[in-house]
Image 1 (cartoon, rainbow, N blue to C red):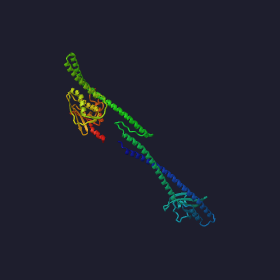
Image 2: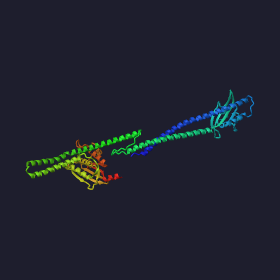
Image 3: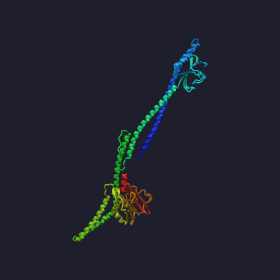
Image 4: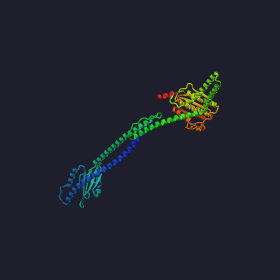
Length: 494
């Protein structure tokens, strides 16, 4: 089962984190650029306005100074009147200072001592070559925009005009703009992340549906759950999965057909290995029948002898027919299907078929079959094939006059079949290979190398286990473990 929750959350989180950080970085850079240019524009506009105001006021001041310098009579305190009037007309003005060329105060709107300007001390102000604007905090902690305007008329220098404007409103406006830009950036980033979240949720939900469908694929039956059709790349992925499911079903059917063909071929090969002995079993009754026919022809009038020979002929033909029926019953390809099977009956059927081979090698076969053995849910014909392969391998491994033991027993929820032979055993270094297809230790023509491989596949298909234990001293024991029918029913109910 694939863990979808952790994968989806991790992928979504990584994408959102990456895109979110990238978006935040881009928005910060864009906001900084926009804010910087806007701030510079605001400051330049304020500086331009302040310089324009300073220049306009300096013209009136220069005119008053020119008139006074040329001896024209003017009302007393005309410059102070200009200062007061200009302060009233410009609400943002906080202070006006008019200095003569020697740095003496000609007129001012404030009562403090000179030298408290944010632009610098008196010598620095008097030496300014041209109009200058400075924005800084004054000693009281307020922000001030200060203009220094040297006053010239021709080549004559009349002094310096210093105007101080309040700049707290400018700073407040800049802070407000920064705050609004921050809110805008946060809103844009949040909307982008929300849209990305919704898009990722849709994509990941589609992938979750696909993963769920993958988990629901039944490899036993080839069932592949349907998926919704879409017109995007996810739809192509769903379509590819459906097509893969169809190919899986077809491949499974092909494999099942191939397995059945291989199993049937191995069964026929096992029958071929029995053919020589069975030919002897069939040939003896036929020869007996021929002898009876010859005797009847020699004395056709002897009815008592004829009746005796006819009974002998019938018994011989019945024996040959029984052998042939056993062969055909084992070799015939039948419809497979699970049904309750008593393992003891399957063992006895196989033993009857190979008894002649045991007799030819004078092998002693001992059976220890549990009379109270429960049934197993299995395909009888396939289980008989496994028993046949194990028993024939044991017969081939045991020398003439050897010993084979077959035992069945119940163990917890399992049925065990043990086939033990007193042969030379299987070398330890090849014990892991004996279940590989086409691997055989027999001479060429004596085995296909498929018997144990097919037997292992049959046992595993029935939910069982097939393993081997072998040593040169004790011989070889193959153990087949199959679940009881009752255990399978309990699992299905759960």
